[in-house]
Image 1: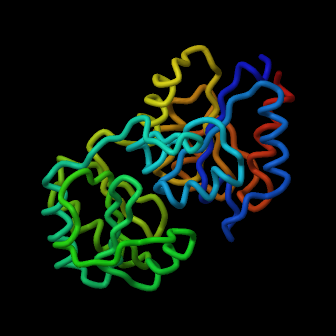
Image 2 (image 1 turned 60 degrees about the horizontal axis):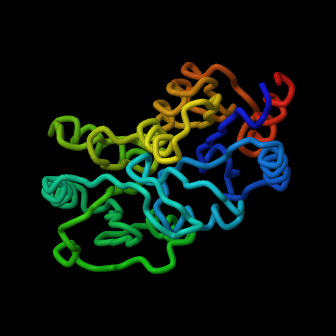
Length: 268
C-alpha cells in the first residue's frame, strides 16, 4: 500500500497537540513528508472556526477539516462551511435550564464562526485565551436564536461530573451530549460525532477508495476510530479509546503523529 492510498485524520488537542498546545516540529515535518508522498491529511476537532484556524494556518492545511466535533466541515483555504448541522430549537431551553442549575459553569454558544459567552469562569477564560480573539460577551437573551451548531459547558472536573449526572436525569433525547475533555461537556446536533463528520467530508470530496487511518485520545474520538481501517490511540488516551484502537503509539508530547506516519511507511 502506497502513501497515496492513505487518508490520515487526527484529533487535535491531546493527540496532534502537546499538553501546552504546540505542534512539534517533528510532527509537522512528518506530515509534510506524508503529503509529499501522496497521502491525504486533515484534522478532526471539537474546536470551532477561530481556534481551528490557528492550527490550519500553522499546518498550511489544504484539505477541509472536521470541526465542532463532527457537526461541521470547514474549508480554511476558502474560509467557508462546506456542510454544517444545527441544534434544534429545544437546545435553547436545555441551556437555560443548565445555566440556572449550574451558575458556576462557563458557557459557550457556537454559531457559525461566532462564539457567544453568556457565562464565564477561570477555565472558560483559559479556553478563550487559546485564540478566540473576538468572543461575544453578552447575556443569554441577547444570543440569536437560530443556527446554533454546538454549546459548550466548561468547568472543573467535579463540576462537569455533576452536570453530566443532572443531564442524564433530564434525558435530552433531541441532542447528542459528549465529554470532549475532562473540563468540557458539549451539546451537539443529534447524530453528530467525528465519525459522521468525517464520513460527510469523504462524501463531499467524493473519496471512497482510500485506506482510512484515524488517531485520537478521548471518548469523542471513538466513532472516528471505529469507522477507520486503522484506528490509532496515543499512549495518553482514555482506556476506552485504547480498547477500540488497532494500534497504540507514543503520547502526544513525544511525536505521536510522526510515529503513526513512520509506522505507515514501514508497512507499505
